[in-house]
Structure formats: C-alpha cells, structure tokens
Image 1 (cartoon, one colour):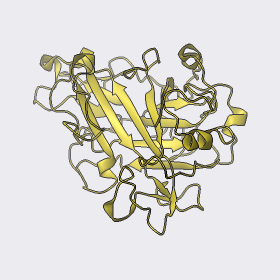
Image 2 (image 1 turned 60 degrees about the vertical axis):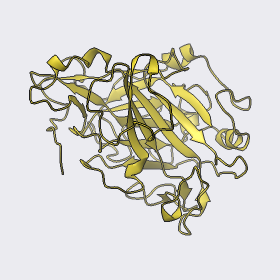
Image 3 (image 1 turned 120 degrees about the vertical axis):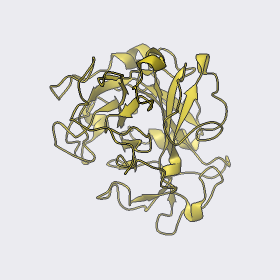
Image 4 (image 1 turned 90 degrees about the horizontal axis):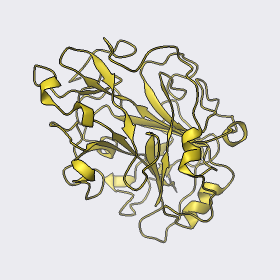
Length: 326
C-alpha cells in the first residue's frame, strides 16, 4: 500500500466539492495537497498544471484531501481547535494527515487509477448515530495511549469505535476514513458526489477481493485517510463539560463522531498514480518523485476566508449548535 504524509495546506471554511463558490462554506475543514485549492475547483482544472507546490510526500500529487476539523468544548462552553500531529514513522510533517492508496490485497488483481476531474465524498456530516451501512462502517476512531500505545490491528478493528472515544486518550485520537472502491467507469462525479462510486457487492469488502457490483464494475484504489488529533492538552476531565458529556465536536457541531466525512479531488500528474499502483509501492516508491518533508511543510496557502477559527471561541465558526442525536 502506498502510504505517505500530506502536511497542512490551510484550515478554513471552504468546500469546493459540496458548496462550490460559497465563501465561507458552512463548516471548517483542514485541507492538504496541492496549492491550487480554491473555493470553486472547476472539475476541468488541470491541477498539476496550475499548482506550484504540494504538501504531500510525492511531488507529482497535486490532489486535494480535506476533512472536518475537531474542536474541544471546555467546561465554560468555549471552543478551541484541536491541532493535528504527525503520524507514526512520518514524524516531521506539519499536521495534516496520512494518505493511503491501496491496490487489491491479493497481490495480483490490478486497479484503475482515478482520472483527471475525478472527485468523491464519503460519510454524512448530518449523521448522529450508526446507520449500520457499508458507508458508515468505513469511519472509525482509535484512542491512543502514550507513544501510540494501542495502535495494533487494522483500522476499525480492535478497540476502535464508530463514535468518539468516551474517555481521555493520553496519546491522541486517530480518525480512520475509507472511501468506496468501485467506479461506474463513466462519470467523474455525481450530484451527491457518491453515486458514481460504490462499495463492493453483497456487503463484501475490498480486503477480501469481493467483486464490484455490475453497476460499478471498475475497481479503483482503496483511498484511506488517517488524521491524528493532538488531544493531549485537553485530557484533564476537570476541564470537560460539567454534565459529563465527552468534550470533542466536529466543526459541524457533531458531538457523536458519526458525522465524520471526507472529500477528495484527484490531481496526480500524468500516469504517476497508475504506475505506483501497478508496482504496488509502499513508503518508498522508485517510480514516483519524492520531496523532503521540509519542502512539503513549506507549501502553505493564505486563507480565503477572513475569520478567526483559532484560540478560545464563544461558538463554532458558522454558529453550529452542538448536537447528539438526529
């Protein structure tokens, strides 16, 4: 599996996939990848051609990846953004997230890399309970002890939960988000940003090489995000809400974690991603051009939205109320 870090590009209220052109968008996202990111992101844009840098390890990847931001809700009702931290063995990256592109686990079957203009969304920001669907099973959280203790097992397995961890996580919280792995072979996007892709047929899994449904016959790489939330400064229960409720909420106001979601806009240069998938690259991928983490960290973007999202805030940006159930 191709595994690499993408440092933080910008954190702000923009969402060119769901609300293109809207400035600001409803809730805050943390965005990584190429610096051509903007409020509109026309699908006809040649991202490798208009980007001048990327925050990702592989310098041929100008894709954009984004997720909702996590906030801490203090006892006095104020909010503070939880920063991201570098993942295990990818130390040095400035926040952001870890990205995986995974070919079929059988070591034989090939996948078709995404095409220019391809984009998709996974998860439901309005969910406040487990819907027990193929999609909802792709989202989970891992509660780490010091030094990434408790990090064994596949994402979503072991002690991972679909909802936010209930107690303090002394080493931070990791978000795990898998995307669909089957494509209709025609549409690069769809009105809901989901219908052109699908999970394997009959509740099967990509890991077990389950077939794609007839409606979406093309196997695409298993795209997977890991986001490490540095909750260590917020682990004192005496500072948590007085009613005993857990203190973390997404920028959507979701206090359950079930509303975790993620967006993707493809932007690899040429056939770079297809080559990497065909050669089943891992951390080191000779067929791809890599850059130093220090160079990736220097690729940053000024904010398009003029608002305060950091420090102690009286309300979440956008004024979202905290919600527990649908």
